Structure formats: structure tokens, C-alpha cells
Image (cartoon, rainbow, N blue to C red):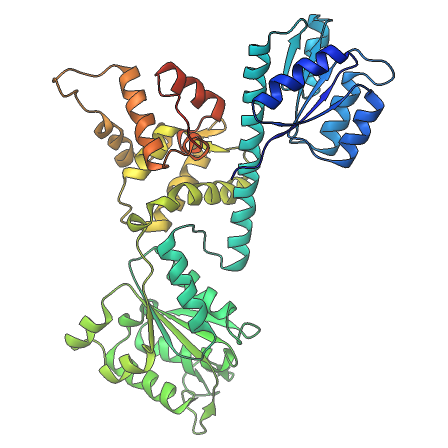
Length: 456
């Protein structure tokens, strides 16, 4: 059950306190009242309120001091000024100091209800954004993988269980799904976390260079080998070796790798004395490894050695509910890097990205957001900042009415809002984030289109 919003009412007129308490309690808020400015300051020092309604002109401590203390102690608390001295100067001063709104006495109760509701919706949205940022920080810290998708959460649970053993792991899946991030997660969750995690792309070297990188060489082993060099097997002692794109390895190189894994020792190029190694192997491929074995491109004995446990992260097309969360993550990442204040994407952009299949997966989404941040001149990524092939998708969202007519802009907007609310299971706070507007603006649109029913 949702916790009641807390409201502090400050006014030195008992009748004003009584009227405000009546209205606010009837709306379901938890109301605390004070007829004294000094007492109100003590209440603000002791507790955070979601909203403060305060008279401007009071003895000893006026409303501006109440506003100042509230913002100093609790920056997210909204403050509404209520006063009989409705001058433009005092209104401007209060708004500049951070007041949400300014209501003149004698106030209308309907106006109080409306402004209070809007202020608290803004406060709730701030709280949810803070929780979202906190969640992102936790997920980044714990796994480096940003997700709220149930399939991905279960996969991470499996990966965490596998990490406690020393079993070798194969991570299969499309390019850009985060296979290396999963390898890092497994390493950090294992007893080897204090050891090194080294990685190599097996497709980036020919056989001779790959053997040199993995096994190292003795001094004088070949022309130019002026010193002894340890390979990744030795350098990774006590840690984890990540073999990316292992199916790109030649069959003859696979024989050498198999021997090293079986014997837990390597022989440097040009050497005669085996070197014992203690490492765990995590391999990755964007191919079907079993099919590679069946086709004779991958050794079956090596397959069984490295594929004790298999994990397959889903493509982004199967975890689209993560797209808004990933957008926020990449916005934070890229705006921090370039020191720009791009804080949102337009609802049209979100709509396009939610429809897109992402053949390049999470990596492609990151590139799209990075591009948008680089091109945006304001605080929002717009459709014009998307790659050209994606910009064309916006026209696919338009449909004729059932009677064959072309829908009006209002009909399109209403239909889109209905769809977003359906996707968000009626949660208006989440829907407003997808739409790129605040809850108050969404509420106004719902009321305008006669859709103002109960919801989250």
C-alpha cells in the first residue's frame, strides 16, 4: 500500500489552519500543522515533509525563512506560499527561492486541492527518479549489468551460483548482448576475484601470434625474442582467463589449448620445462558451439572441457522492458564523459526504440544514445538525432482509422498514451517517464481526453 504523503501547514491564523487541515486530510494526506514560525522550523529540522504550505507574513519567522530552511534541509520538499499579500514582487521572490507555487488569500479550496496534488506528484516523481538512480548505482556496483528484466535476473542468479565453483563456462549469444560483462560478473563473484581477469579475442590473431600470447616464449625462441615473455596462462595465475570468440581458433590451436587445460600446465615457445598454471576458463562465442562441433569446425573433446556450464544472455529484443533503464544508464554514462546536460529522450524516440529489433543489441543502443548526446543542443534527444534508418521508423507508427480516415493529431496522441499506459500496466509515474513528460502534464492530458481514471 502506498505511503501517505506528508504535509506541513504553517499559518498564524487558526481559521486558515482549520480549513487547510480539513481539505488536505480529506484528500488522504498525513497533515501536521503549526501556528508558529519558530515551532515550524523545529518540525522541519526534525523531519522531512513531502510538502510545506506556509503563510508568507507571520511574526518572528516568516514564510521565506520557512522556505529557506525547508530547501536547506530537504531539497526535494516542495513548498507552496499562501498569503493575503499577493504582490508580484513577493511572488517572484518566493519562486526564485524555490517555491513550487504561490496562492493568494482568500484561497479557493479547489485551487488548494489542485496545486497540492500537482506539487506532490512532482515530489513523488523526484523520489522515483532518485530510487531509479540508486537502483542503477547498485546494479552497476554489484554486476556491472543494468537490468530489471526477470529473464536476465534469473540468468545472473545462475551465473552467481556457477561462480562459486571452478567449473569452466561458455557464454553463447549474439554480439552485443554483454558476454564480456557476464564474464566479469562471474569472476568478481568467485573466490578468484582478487586474482587477475585477462581476456583475449581469439579471432584477432593468427595461430603463431595467438600461441605466443597464450603460452609466452623463452629468450631466443625466434628472431626478435630478446627476453623471456610470460603468456596469458601464466600472467593469469589464480584468476580467470576470458577466451572471446573461441570458435575462431584453428583446429591445430585447439589441440594446444586442450592439452594446457587437461594438464594444467603450459610449455612456452622454445621451452622444455612445463609451467604449472591455476586458472579458470570462461569462453564466449556468437556461434552455435554444438553445431560447430557437428560441422567439424570445433573439437568435441575441447568442447566438453570448456563447456561444463553454458549461459546464454538474451538479445535486447527479448528484454525490451530494459530499454528505458538502459537509456538512462547510457545517458548518465555519456553525459558524464562529455560534461553535457542531456537528461532525457523525447517520447517519439522512446517509441521508436521500443519498436526497433536491435540487431546490434545493447551495444547498438549505447551507440544510439552516445550519438544522441553528441548531437543534442538542448537537454533532450530528439528524433532528428537518431541514425537515418531509425528516423524512418517514426512513420510506421501512423495508422488510418478503422473507417479509412486519417486520424487527427489528438487521436494519435490519445491512442499513444493509451498504449503506453497499457504497456506500463496503468502505472502513470512509469508511463510519464516513457512519454518524457512529468506526471502533472500526463494528468492534464488524461483529463482532457476523458481518461482520468484511477491508476498508479
